[in-house]
Amino acid sequence: MTAKDNEAQATQGGGGRVGWTRGDKTVLKALGLSGGIFGACPCCVDVKNGKVVRIRPLHWDWKYDPKSFNPWKITKNGKTLEPLYKSVPAPWSLAYKKRTYSPNRIKYPLKRVDWDPKGERNPQNRGKSKYVRISWDEAAQLIADEVKRICETYGPLAILVQGDGHGECKMVHAPHGCSTLLLDKLGGFTQQVRNPDSWEGWYWGSKHVWGKGYIGMMAPHDNIVKDICENSDMVVVWGGDPETTAWGFRGQFASRLLFFWTEIGIKQVYICPDLNYSACIHADKWIPILPNTDAALQLAIIYVWITEGTYDKEYVETHTVGFDKVKAYVLGEEDGIPKTPKWASERCGVPPWTIKALARDWAKKRVSIGHYFGGGMIRGPYAHEPARLECVLLGMQGLGKPGVHQAQIAYTGMPKNVVTGGADHMGPFASLQNTPYGERLLKPHRGTPTAWGKQMIPKTLIEKAIKEGKVECWCTGGHDGPHEDQYKKYVYPIPEEEGGTEIHMIWTDTPCRTTCWG
Image (cartoon, rainbow, N blue to C red; front, top):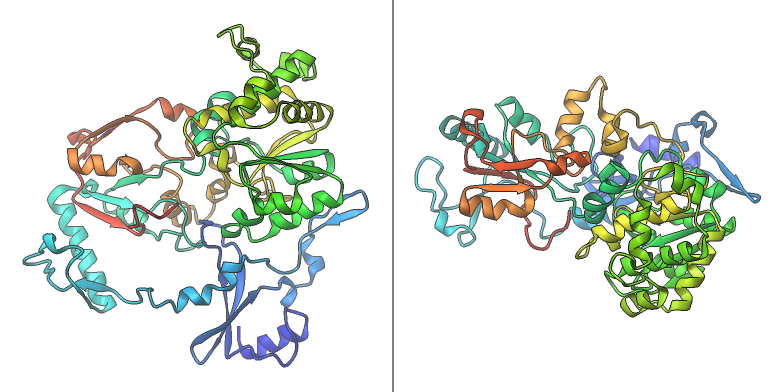
C-alpha cells in the first residue's frame, strides 16, 4: 500500500481523516500473538523513513463494497449483531511497535565466540560465553551443515523439533516456521508433542464421556454463536474471561458478543474464584468459588435436578448411556454420601441456597455453558472431573437442543463456519486439508497440533528422555487426536530397525522452558 492508497483510504472512510500523516507506505500484517494459523487481527502498519510510526485497524471497506461481502446478521428482540467493517485488534496488537523496537529483541544471527563447529565446541561454556554477530548466509550454512552432519552420523530422527504451541499468526510460513516440512523431506525427525495444557480436563476427561470433539470440547459446533443468540435464555460462563483471553486470538469480537447478549436479554452467570473483567462488566450474577472445587458444585446441581425431577428424562433415556451410575453416585448409593448442596458448600464455598437457586433457575431455562478456549477450571489437579461432569450437566438438560450447548465463546462456532471434514477432532486445522496447497500449508502447521514425526516425546518428558535415554508412556500423540489415541503406548526411542535413535540435536523456536506458556 502506497501513500496514494493511504490518501484514498482516508478519503473513503478507511479509518482516518484526510490530512493525517500516514507515512511513506502502509504494510498489512496479521498481529494476533498466539493464534497459530489464522492470520488474525489484521492491521495497517504505517511506515515512514523506514520506521513504524503507527498501527491501526484494517478497514475492510477501504477497497471493497460492504454489500459484496454478503455479511451475516443476527437479530433478536429488535437488536442486531453484525460484523464491523474493520478489524478489532487487541491492545497489544496496536502496541506491536514496542515489540519491534524493544532493546531485548535479537535482530541478527549470533554465534557463541568459543563455538567452532569444525573444532572445539566448548559445551561447558553454554550460558557463560559471549556472542558475536554473523551474517545470515553464514548462519544458514552453519545450520545446513549441522543438520546434514547429524543425519549422516546418527540418522534423521536424532533431531528433536520443538515447534509446538502458540505462535504468532502466520499462514504461508506457519507460526513456527517450516522446520517440520524441511526435516520430513530429509527423512523425518523426532517431534516434541505439546501437552494439551490449555485443555487438560477436557482432553483427559470429557473425551471419555462424549467421545471426541476438538481437544475434548463439544463438536460439531457450527453456528453455535447464532443458535445461542436466538435460543438461549442464559449463559453460564464457567471459569472464563472472554473480555481479555480472546485478545491473543480473535481480537475483541467476544466483547461485542457479551454486550449483545445483555442487550437481547440473555442472562449471564459467571462462576469463577476472581471477579474477572468479564464478570465485572457482564455478570447478572457472579458466583465466587474456591479454586479446583467445581466438581462439588456440579454434583450438587445434579443432585437438585435428580431429587426434584427437573432434568430432561426423555433425552437422558434416549441419548445417554450409564446415567444410572451417575445417579447412584450423586444420591450416595455408591459411597453413602449424598452430594447435597450442603455437602458441596463445605467444599466449594458456594452457599447451599445459591446452589439450589442456580440449579432451579437453570432447569427452567435454555442454558448454554460458555468458556474461552479451555477455561481456567480444567487446568488444576484432577481437572478431568469437572470436565466430565460438565458433559453430564449438559446432557441432563438436552445437549444439542436449541440454546443448549457448550460454547467456546467467539472461537469455534462462529456465525459462518466453512470448516469441513475432520472438524470434529481437528478443529480449525481441518480447513487446510484437501486444498491445492495442502502439502505446503498443512504439514508446517501440523507441527503445532499433531504428532506426525516418526518418533515423538511428550513435552513434559523431554528432560527424562535426555537424561535416561528412554521413555515409555501412555499419553497422547498430539493434542488434537481422537480419544482412542490415549490407549496407545508410546516409546522413545522407537525400534532401531524403524530408524529409532536417541536425540543429538534440538531444533527449537520455543527455548523458554520455565516461564513461557503455550
